[in-house]
Length: 67
Image 1: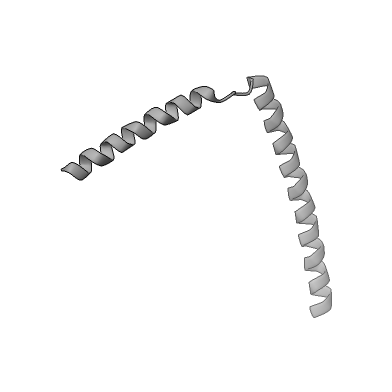
Image 2: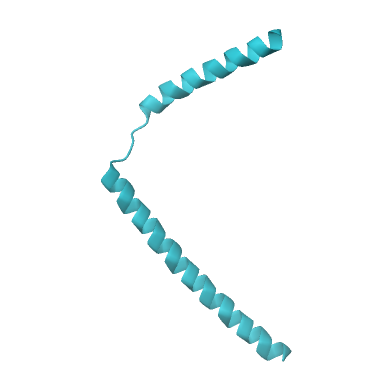
C-alpha cells in the first residue's frame, strides 16, 4: 500500500511541475503555426517527389543491368 501512495504522490508532483513548466512556454500565434505547417507540407511533397524519381531511376537502371 505504501508503494501505491508513493507512486501516486510522485505522479501528482510530476503533473504539478509539468503544469508550471507549460506556463513558461511561449506558444506561437495561430498565423505562425499555419505558415510553418504549410512550409513543412510543401517540403515533404518536394522531398517525396525527389525520392520517388530517384527510386524510379534506380529501378530502371537495375532492370537494364540485370535484364
